[in-house]
Length: 268
Image (cartoon, rainbow, N blue to C red):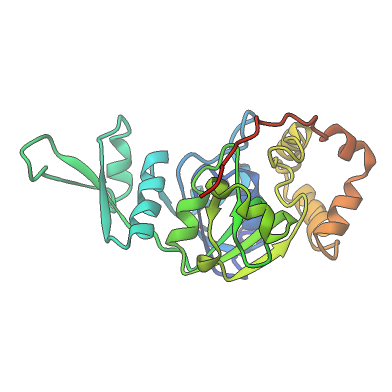
């Protein structure tokens, strides 16, 4: 077996599923964590391909399923609703139907044009990061929330990571912002800065320099291994990782406060 093939041999046979995964997939595949990826668009945003994932797929070392963005969301919506599948409108990505036999067409029972159907996705575990949560798992989430709510309701188990753990009264003060309720959450973890190199709106910005740097790091097996040894296996936890990034990075990612208008919920 070649050195390149050994690099991609999974040590932990995870199936990773996410709409629009970015360089976290590159890192997990490089670390030998994944045997399969399920995704819609996948890349290093604004930079290019995920070199490691792409190489592993092209070499037949990594199983894969690809959907459109809405296809991935529809799969999770079906899973959250307890349905075996859901229909969706036809898209321009007809080639995906040839590449993925799980994407099917069925007649509209009411006489219209055929519709696309995709199977439900029910992850064993969903890991969801939120801005704040109480200790029971009631979570506030705002900004571009993606498919996090659908993934939480579709999953068999939910691990919640939060920028802040707050008193229950804070969550109750703005109930409409509670995207994920405690009754579907299995674990609550206080993990500030867990989104880095991405962002958490209102807490820190996207680390664009990191995404550019990863494009260079991922060019060779040696530089990827060195990165993983230093920044993944070489730190004890997320707190140590954040401290290791240093004050210069912390300052670069700070965001100014920009509050929404107050909401008067009145008496009920």
